[in-house]
Image (tube, rainbow over all chains, first blue to last red; front, side, top):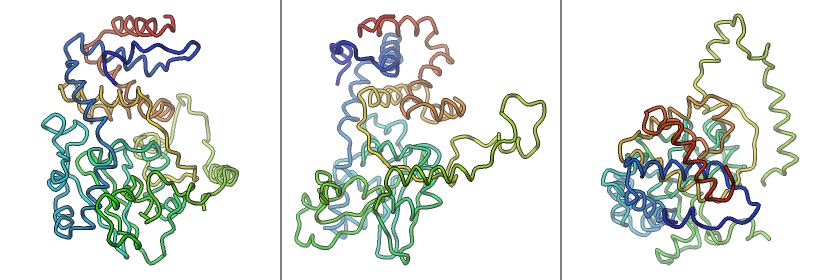
Length: 226
Length: 142
C-alpha cells in the first residue's frame, strides 16, 4: 500500500467506506500538509510494518532449538540476540518504534513450567519479532481472564496442561516485551532450521499453543482433524 | 475441546447473572456512598483479573485502515507530536462507552484526531473539510 495509490482506488458501488478509514486518510493527509511528518517518513515506517511478522520469532526459536549457545544468548539478552537473525529493535527509526523501544525477554518453556503472555492494561506485544498482535490478544476479555484463570483460558485454546505443570503468566508493559520459547516437540529429530521454523506458529510463541511436528500455520489443527 | 457456541452462551448468561444489579441507574445521583465512589474511580483499562465468561478467541484479518492507523500513530510519535503513553492515556480518557464500544484501532484513530485538535495542530474546521473531501473522493458524498 502506498500514499499515492490507496485512496484513489475505485470503490465498488454501494460499498460503504468505514468512517475510520476516512478519518485515517484525513489525518494522514493533514499531517503531511502541515509538515508534522513527511510522506517519506510514512513510507519508511509502512515498509517496516509490512515486513514484520511471526516469521522473526519462529526463526529465533528454531535456531535456539538447534544451537545451545544461541539459546543461551537469546535467554540472556533477547534484544541484542535478535540482531543475529537480522531483527534490530532500533528499527525503523534508529530509536525503535515509538511503542516498542524496550527490553525483550524470551521465556523458556520446560517440562515443569509453561509461559503465556498478555498485556492486561492494553496491548503491548513484541511486534518486531511477532508482527501485529492477533485481535483476541488485545480484547479486554483475554486481558481480564488469562491472569486469573490461565489454565481455563489455555484449555479454551485447546491446550490442556497437566496439573503438575506450573503456568506463569507474564504481563507485558511499555518497557518489557515477552515471547515464549516453546519446547521442541518429539518427531522433529534431524530437521533443518527451516523445517523447525515452520511449526513454530504465532500462538506457540504467545503461549496459547505448543508446537507439534504435524501442525504448522498452513495446516491448522481443525484442518488436521477433518 | 472448545465448547460449542450454545454452551458458551449458556455459560455467559450464568456468569452475567452473578454480577450484582446496580442499585440505581448511573445518572448523576444526588449522593453516592464512599464504596461506590471507590468503584467508580477504578481506571477502566485495568481489567486484569476481572471475572468474565469464556468466548471464542477468533482471528481477524487486519483491515487496510487498521495497519495504516498503526503506522500513522507511530509516525506522529516518531516526529514528536505525541508518544504511545499519551495515546494510551487518551484512549482510557475516552470513557467506558467509547473505550469498550470502539474496535481496537477505532480507538487509536479517534484519539489521534482528538489529540491533534486538542494540541491546536489541526482545527476542527480543517478536519471536517478534509473528511468531506476524502468522502467525496470515495464517492460517498459529504
